[in-house]
Image (cartoon, rainbow, N blue to C red):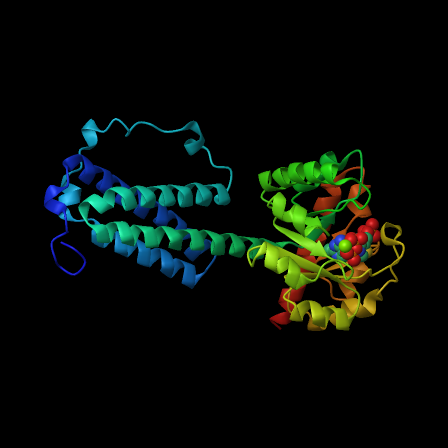
Length: 360
Ligand SMILES: Cc1ncc(COP(=O)(O)OP(=O)(O)O)c(N)n1
Ligand SMILES: Cc1ncsc1CCOP(=O)(O)O
Ligand SMILES: [Mg+2]
């Protein structure tokens, strides 16, 4: 029966083998969606995404008629024992989700094509759901990125170094979750190759990868986002190219620059330089007053930057910072894993204190 209680259009003409295909793929699609739904509900606490998944599952359930279920013939199915070794290993939640979204999209495509032989409405419904899954995947990726950004307290901005990959990997091993590739002096071929490799490295550790200055390269290598200063392209321009799913950060040195960055839709801001720094010699320090202003007024994630190391960290905390970005403190560290762990433990402590104060 169709959704309206009418017999399915071509049900009586549909060969048993096609019914088996439809039965298997209705199951496959529903199982995959269920796996995604559990993460939307318990991992992201996102009611809207959870509901979208639930509605799709219910719709697929309604199409799963007794006729299709009775076509099942598991003992004679040669595909039952076939698994790819990659299916048995998942490194993180993202891989689980990616694999299952892919499975759902494939199953819906199969349902769309073979479903036309059973009932044209099934083909149409599955096509619509497939597009819904694509949208879900985009929203989902965007949500994941924003969550990771919110949770990041330490931000490594790289500088050119013979030990670039070694330092970044050591810091990732120490628990770093946010990296920006910054090299003002190299050529674009090197930049592109290095960015590509760093992105893979960061993603292997589940960290976000941001590119400094260059929207075009960020787009080309599918980075998680871009960092733009006051002299770089406007946020609206970057947003047009990168869409709403990717992260856009903006440097700010004053309340006015912060106000504009917020109005333009930045996802996070850099606040500084807090102190004078040889890494950015031409920039006048904004000082701790601006850090205090950010602590009072900034509604989005903000990272104090400029001259921050283990010695200045306590003052930056006193100014109200709960997130910091560093270049030299990590790029020049002899033991970047240990330094990362030290920063992260101090940041976790200050964040606990702040939350306790906020709760009274
Ligand atoms: C996190 C963060 N904050 C500030 C900056 C500086 O950006 P910008 O002012 O564009 O200067 P350059 O880094 O491009 O020299 C940053 N990169 N990251
Ligand atoms: C890129 C940048 N933007 C403001 S300060 C700064 C450099 C910070 O470098 P360091 O952490 O070595 O002082
Ligand atoms: Mg810049």
